[in-house]
Image (cartoon, rainbow, N blue to C red; front, side, top):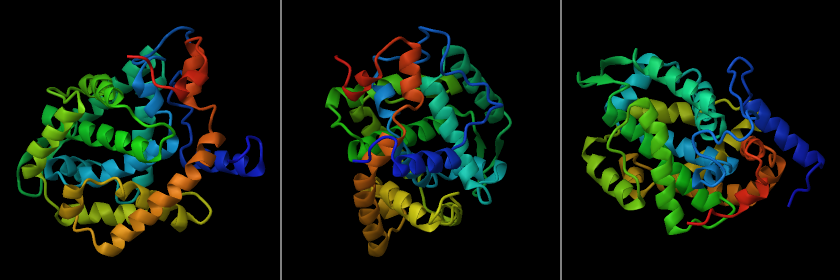
Length: 305
């Protein structure tokens, strides 16, 4: 265990802040007004799962792999973003949105959702097979949401500090539906069983094509502003791909050597996660708990049913 205040602790904090810097122009408020629970609050499962940085980063990267398998969802990213040259920027923006809607006060969360809705309204086109897509189409919003929250939950189960009870997993899916609904998603799965059924039903729409391969190549070379950037990238990408369900591994044509790297990355992240967790134990979840007048130590146990 890394002791708080040690040089290693300080170095980890610096590296994370450099990788995911706060944008002072964003005007997202986490500390006031007193008592505002935001969209979730101290007694939610969401505040516990989203508080764990190692699990959330691995889960977020895993979601990018899954999202690359949906041609129409991928087309919007392909046509309307610079992900091939700035994938880290895309990851930062997604991280900021999830953090803000999870922990910011209510007006900030609502403003973030409104900003994303405005962006989505302009994202339209045809995919590589000539089929129309729109980023605010409920079915595409549903796909992106489910891949994210199911990956966050898988990341927490594998790398998080507490086992996840079955009821907490169902509650998490029910709670986080609010985020996707704020963007226009409908008919969202709200339990583990419903998520599994949805992923089975949508599988016929998925495929691994040239664009999918380009996304994976961009992930493989994403530039992290860290010492030993290649090693850090390999650790987190390995830990992320270790979360892929078997059906996704098959679609992605994962080789035995890639699966070996995933297993090594998962083992490495499990070993370093406690140090990362200790280094940032005063993050946004803690600030939100204090805004609500609650003891941050409550985040170390699941809320009662």
